Amino acid sequence: MRLLRKYYFFPLLLFLSLFIDGQFSFIFSRFIPNQFEAISFLFFYGFMMLSLYFSEISCIWLGIFFGFCFDVYFLNTLGISFLLFPLLQIIFYHWNQVILLNRLTRFLTFLLTIFCFQLLASFLEIFLIGIKFDLFSLVVFQIAPSLLLNLFLLLIFQPLFEKIYL
Image 1 (cartoon, helix red, strand yellow):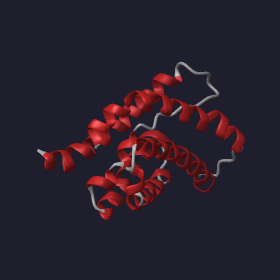
Image 2: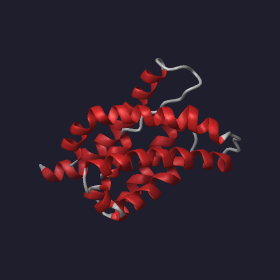
Image 3: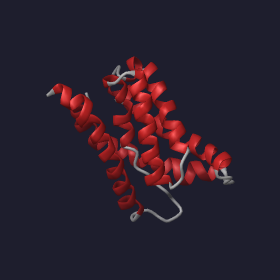
Image 4: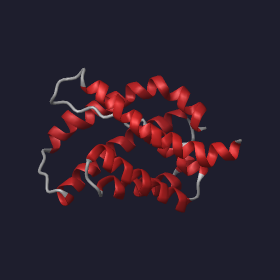
């Protein structure tokens, strides 16, 4: 049963959590003003835990797969998450002893991952798509609402996530 959970249930659960994040983002976008963009990234909590169950090469391949799915489902472009998710998996794999130290480090790593992902994704959009943006507007209208939303959601769901992923 543990083998089934480790190799099949865990990636399937992460894949489904991408779609659940999309629904959370859609629901919360209805309740906030239009200029703010709060995106749910609960997927990243499980994505951090991939390094516990899989080898480094498997983590990189799963990062490529989930990056492709994230690009197609959320960003409607190919390349941004496709590049960032394997990079995040390499970082998680080499730092998993620090990440798993206690609940606070997992919590802070989760928030730092969201901040870095959104910032790096915006910088990659400059090179891949040619979008111009204001850094202040990015932080105030996109990153800050996303961090607040994910902070709230993780406070609610963290005990459940620890039962599932740990």
